[in-house]
Length: 152
Image (tube, rainbow, N blue to C red; front, side):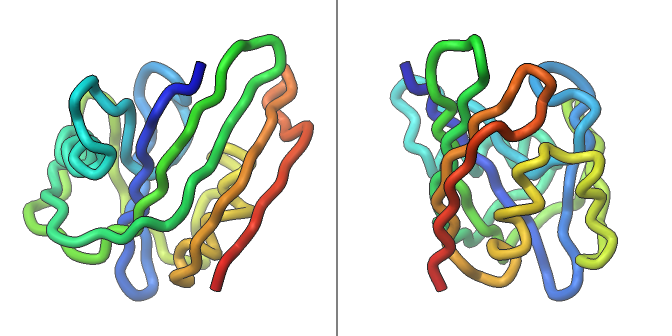
């Protein structure tokens, strides 16, 4: 069974906002902002809601940036993650119970403290490209198999 999720990349020229996940799935890793799509909620509305819940910003404009599918050895189902690029927002960045946000210069993105797939698709996403892919994770957290299509 697929689980529908969102992931927002919040960036401005030269830097990107990431959040240190403080609890739950992915705790201890830097990531974009997003999460589960609730019953009856559109994917876009879920993305906007999650950004506000996790870092306090209100999304004013975003573009679809692809779909990434994740599977894990020994686990059923696919995580279907709808990727968005956020280019306009309002509000002030604030820490939440779930995430500790921090701006990073593009050249200082902490890939070694992120999910290993991020190094493949995030640079293309930050360049305005669309990324569609599938990543299968081994029990040790490494990528066992992957496909990635980057569309200009």
